[in-house]
Length: 370
Image 1 (tube, rainbow, N blue to C red):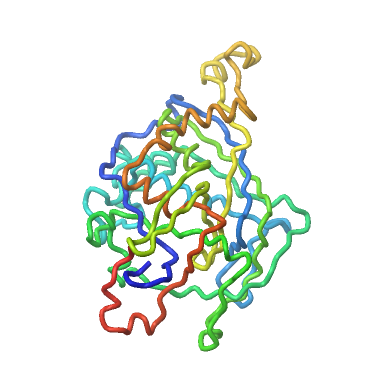
Image 2: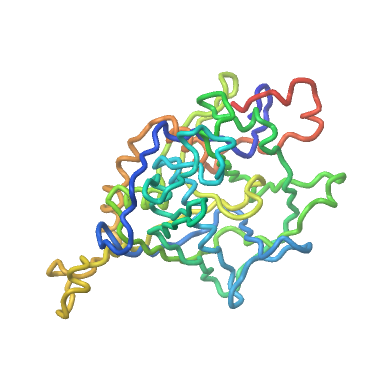
């Protein structure tokens, strides 16, 4: 929240890790590391809207073959943002380093990449540029309901921009240096108390047919040549954590929240839309390349030379093993991320952007978020 106020800004700036480890990626032709497929589901916990385009009012939800979808590119962007904080990644959207400390500016050589660029891809910004295509491919998420339920909402997407530097400074440095990432809080109360639009701003609002909570989507993630630590990171940013306890706010208005960590995706995130729960339903690790490509003998996972698919209890144990290092990590980046992404149905906070008159009051524009 802004200092001295009782409402909460819809987002928080989360610090990145202090060190970015860059190294050459394991490229596709080398057949090293882990390759396989994750089968996943996504359930929306609050209304969800993915715009087909930015024209017309009302807007329309993106569909394919008359089914609502979440593009794989949107899922990839959401996961990459998490990988940058959790794994230590560059500020890929600031290509020229204008708002970014040199140590955190975007990777500029395919032979020296942060973990996010190694996993999700990168293109050099120069003549004769080289491209690293990335090692993680994400399908579109397709709704499973035959008759999806939608409800029209009025949404107003208008809030502080990066020109209000006091709201975009890195919380651990106090500077506008790009050593942080923007994440939106969950707003569980939106399902029963969606914010209205002031009459004087009604002509700027969108009408959006958002999916009501409880719809299920399915999607796949294929990966190739991931180092073990990269596969660990991929699984963590998908599954997150199921039980966290955080304390937020200042000394006079501390709030304790308990619950799992959940994702946010889609449009109108500042108004509470887009909270979702991702589950991994199965994990298949492909057979060693020597078994797959250098023999005509049939593959058999029982003999150790075939694909291995984990589900149910075996999958749960594998996930617990692979994410344990992140669950135990209490560096500033991880602890602040937990404070933003925790989903607590009893969360009492009121979220909205400061209005124009708030910024017009003497001194308010310099207030920081606490």
